[in-house]
Structure formats: structure tokens, C-alpha cells
Image 1 (spheres, helix red, strand yellow):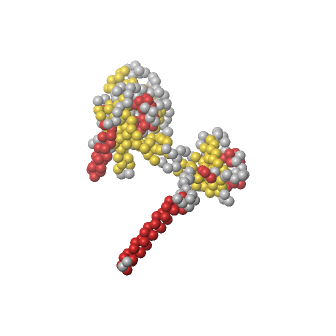
Image 2 (cartoon, rainbow, N blue to C red; image 1 turned 30 degrees about the vertical axis):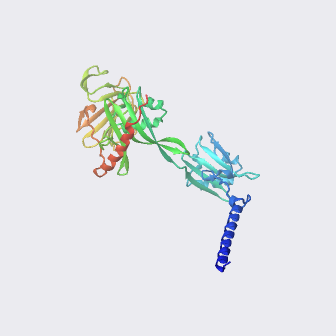
Image 3 (cartoon, one colour; image 1 turned 90 degrees about the horizontal axis):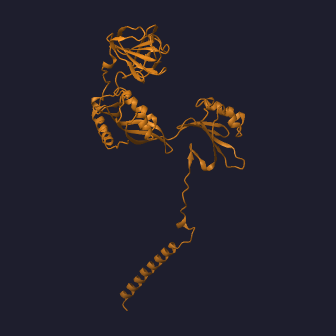
Length: 416
């Protein structure tokens, strides 16, 4: 056999030997006994936290604070000493005054798992979002906390059969949404004139904590069909304030509310010759009488300043508010003297009194008046100008947002 052939056979043998050894090692690894490096993966134990505290390390006790129950009574029952309670109250004061603990709110106690358990942490739940954590160690620490809040978009659409309130209630929607919609459209819809088969579509957000809805956050967009007219409202922020605008970027807020109260009916309209029910003669009535239950809240129709508060035998208790250089409004027959002073600034929708029947009155009502340039005018004929529209430089951004919401509103199905 030649030397070259011998070298070739020897090399081939070395290669085959290496392959066999590699396969043997691989097989050995595939059949590694339990406990070797291959099987070292252990299930991951997820730690569950409540108020930022790992619950697996404690026994949890939650109690509701009873009426007339004080902090000392609750803590002494759980082995916390007078000195610790005093220390807790002192250290808590800059953050939360423990004397303001409210019956019906809750305490959560975190007990150690020792043979003789003691309270390590206690949490006072101020409301659904805020809480105070007290940690009891060599010294007491006090930390305020807030639960994480997220927001979820929801939609609702319906046909009114009796009232907006009843319609949304039938759809299991929070009454807060009714109030929000009434506020948004307060300047453009007279809610006492809602008609059967008026309809609405609303896109709104709810606040979520721990996977549960805790309340309405805001209306994002809405559509209301009323008296043959379509009325849109789109939320948009400018100058650091969120307002509602129609599809053309005009504000839905007006200088004045359409009415200063929730009333049952208009018992007497503006007239140059009305038969007075008490004086029994014809005389001008330069206002609108709104019949309402005694004690019904009366609010200012717009921002302004109180210029007169008085009483006379005809008008009873009344107040006048100057809104600008053109308009002044008056509110008569109030239940009692308004809790205001001449010169006070008032805001739109601020309470200024309650419906009464002081002065010449046969029943509880509000006599509402408007002066334009010093002359009494029919409040129903006052055209209140809209406030500032979407700024020109932001109109493109507004139009894009409104277009998206409008498409969403159009596809919502009305629920009877």
C-alpha cells in the first residue's frame, strides 16, 4: 500500500471518530437527568401588590369606619399603643388630618405572618382614587398615594320618549352624562322643550380604576337632533381651557343662559298690557314669569357684577346683575335676600337665590327681566352672541378631530 493511501485512510478515521464523539455527547445532553442545567427553569411567581404593598407577605383585613368611630378606638383594638397613635397623628397632619376621617370610608390593615401577628401597614382610603399609607416600624412613616387612573372610550345613542334623563337611565348610563350634556347644550337647547323622538349620539370617556368604571370623565363628541335641527358638539382645547364647538368651530357657549332656572312653565310672558292678578288692572309686564317650585335654584345667566339688591312691596326680594356695557338682568320675588353684596362678581350659572313669592305674587315664581342699553326688552328676543370660536391657526387641527368623531357618531345605532 502506498504511503499516500495510508495517510488518507488515517485522516478519514480521525474525522469519523470526531463525528461519533460529538453525536454521543449530544445524545448524552438530550438525556440529562432532572436537576441538571437543562431543567433549571422554574415557574415565575408573580407578586401581587395592593396600595404598593406585596399582599403575599401579609394577612389582609379591611374594615369600614362606622359612624362616630374614631381613629384611636380602631387602632387600640388592633394592638397599636397610645404613643404610636399620637405619633401617627402628628406625622400625618402635614399630609392628612386624621380628625377628618369619614364614616363609610375604609381602613386596610396588613398583619405580619408571624406567630404573634402585628400590624405593619395600615391604609386609609380617602376616596376611590386617593389613599394614605402608614407604616409602623421603629418610627412611623406617612405616604400619600393615588391609584392608577386610565380612561376608556364609550358610546351611547338613543331616542327620547319622555326625557333625556330617563332615556340614558334606561340604557344604564350614569346620570352624570345627562348633566354634562345639559351643560354643554345649555346655551343652544331649551331643555324644558325637549320633544318625543328627539335623539342623541354621544362619545364619552369614563375613568377606570382597577378595571372598574368609577365615573364619567368627559364628553368627547355628541350629536343632538332637536326641533328639526342637528346640533353637534366637539371637545377642543385652546388657551388652556377645554370648550365645546359646533361643526363650524363656533363655540356652543353663549354670553347668556337661555333661562336662569329649571322651571315648570312660563306663567306670564313679556307684555305691554297684562291684567295684573293682584292689582286687578291692566299694566305693562316687562319680563317673563317662570313658574317653579318654591326653593328652586336661580342662577345668573352670565358673568357679571351685582349692581343692586333690594326689596319692595311689588318685586319682593330682587337682585340686578350688570353683564357688560349693554346688558343687565334682574331676578324678582326671590325667597329671601340673596347672599350677595353690591359689587360682588358672579359667574355664569352661579346661584344667586331661590324661587319664592315675596312681593306681589299669587304663587312661587321668578320674574326675570333684561335691560338692553338701559331699556327693558323681551328676554326671549335677546340674541346672545357666541363667545370666541376656534382660533384660525387651530382650525385645521380642530377640523381633523371633528371629522374623525363625526364619522364615529354617524354609525352609532339609536337605541329605543
